[in-house]
Every structure is written in structure tokens, then in C-alpha cells.
Image (cartoon, rainbow, N blue to C red):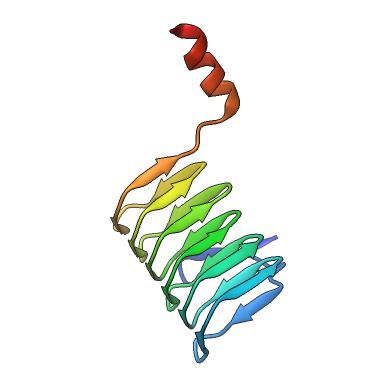
Length: 128
């Protein structure tokens, strides 16, 4: 079930929460679902979904499955599924994603590389 907090829709199945008053320096690794409303100065490598709330700020690279950004990320983002930039999001860095949604008023400065599904790649190869 989803509930709305700020402008970010989140799953109630959050395994780890870094609240607004938390500041982390260093790499975060783990699995499950992660929500960040505080500040992280370091890379995040998570085997699961990541939600960066409106007050969340990341200075470092972010890697996860489905990633939703409502706050600020200064670093590269790699998503194995979908990356969503919500209206309050600011991302400065390159993204490598399977699916990319940028909502109106979100800010993105960087390059985007989308991994094409194998079925689409095969279709292009057959047309040549």
C-alpha cells in the first residue's frame, strides 16, 4: 500500500529510514527499501528501492532498483528499474536507467543513458 508524504509516494514497506535530523558521512550499503529524508555525504549502493524525500540531500552516487527523488542529488544515479524525479527534485549528475520519468518543475542537469531491453535491441538488429 502506498501513502503520500510530501510529494513522494512511498511504500509502507520501508526497511530503513534516515530521518530529517540525520547526517551520514560514508558509504551506505544494504538491501530492502530505503527512505532518506536527511543528509548523506557518500555513495549509496542498495539492493532494493530508494526514496529520497523532499528534505533529503545526497552528495555521492546512488545505485538501486527503483529510485524516486524528491530532494537533491549531486552525483550519478544508476537505477535497475525506474527513476522518477518529482517536482521538487534537483539532480546534478549522469543517470543510467531502464525507465526515466521527469515531472514538471523537476530540475536535471546531466546526461542520461537508457539501457534498452533485449527484445528492443533484437528488433533493431533485425531491421538492419
